[in-house]
Length: 437
Length: 175
Image (cartoon, rainbow over all chains, first blue to last red; front, side, top):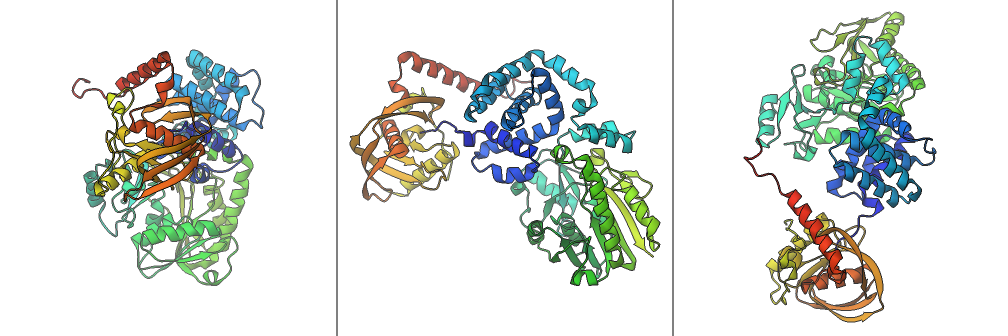
């Protein structure tokens, strides 16, 4: 006997509920972690696609929806608003049969007990189907709805990247590749590529980064040969540059000062297992992820709870040969992987983040040994968090000087170097390498 | 364990009557495990052997929300029926169709477990409905048999069309 799929296991209903909470300021990854319990394995990918797709295109979908409605949906009806956007998303971007997209979205409104909205959603989606071309070209006329980017973010990217802003915005709306970091202490990249090929997984190496491999099609990590035993990790190629630039040597004291979730710590230890690594973070819950990651990679580090902006305790009394400072940032370089950042970030956040970054940099600097090296890193595209930040620090810190990064990837800035989303198959990262004299 | 192929209406094999099980062996236990896996994956709350083209009188059921309370009934029979109510039912052999069916509200059941031991118990609510639904299968009956002829024909056409559309393109013809 089969049961009629109820509201709790209906992918569109669940997506609408998650998207409403997203509007309340929680990240998609968080929401998906808890929200998929009643969804069958077959429908999970669908719910994810709904959530990521609507988050990615939201400003564009909203512009189209507003043309189709005489008055906006009330703020308290977040689920109905989400269903309207989801309906347009399916019709405009997904390979769902149009009649099914309309019927299923309307059915979701019914399951959510929003009977008043059933006629509205049905009429609105059918009108979109009829006037599709006109509506889409209307949306293309304005950069905000064309690139699906909130106005303040768009303006800021345009200011900081006057020549590249359009290609950056286009890259944001692409599906990111699934990129792996091969554990080169266990096998060569060529050997791992052969292993992938033997498992029927198509992949290509990334030129600029010796450990990076891009999969033709994303797969579940459980399908990756050797994943559970640490042969490979999932990490963007741009993020894999951190351990390379740090150039830690055997015997060194190394501090990863904002370590969670531990991806870069793991990479540093893969490159040079014979170091003393301290992995610090101020978020206890996220430190658990560091432990988890290091355990999978079969590595050990001193994992410490502490605030890099306010150094106290044993870790703060030591000096280090290498410090990785992967500071909290706007994450505007990784929007193609986390499209919800477009909605979660506010313009006033940037100044606050920049202030914290400056505090961390100044607080950590005294722990660097003379002759030692500090790598300042962000996944931001904004000068205020990147070169302007480091420039200001170099202005006040007499014993600090830049060690220029010579590389084939990215764009040199006044200080440091930046990768841009989509270029060289990377997300957007900023790196500046500083030495203590 | 394996996922079994579920027959779809109007497959004539759904009309077969299942036979009394006499040997309670590993083969029967494997069938039960495979049927449970098939049912959970579908997902459904009950599955009868005739639906997977096996003619041993066996049904598997799990009406729990958490999908962790499986029940395997061999040679089941209903001893008593009480009350009457109408509930919307669906069937893994008639996908996408949900229709109200009138059934008894409380029943008394006798069956054997996979070891061949006889068990007797009372059931109500969804469990009672599900047992009645599955027992019908063992006798070649479907929940849509009580609908009007016209309605049943419409369901048949719909499913036949879906079946045709699900056929993959023959390799070699698409250039």
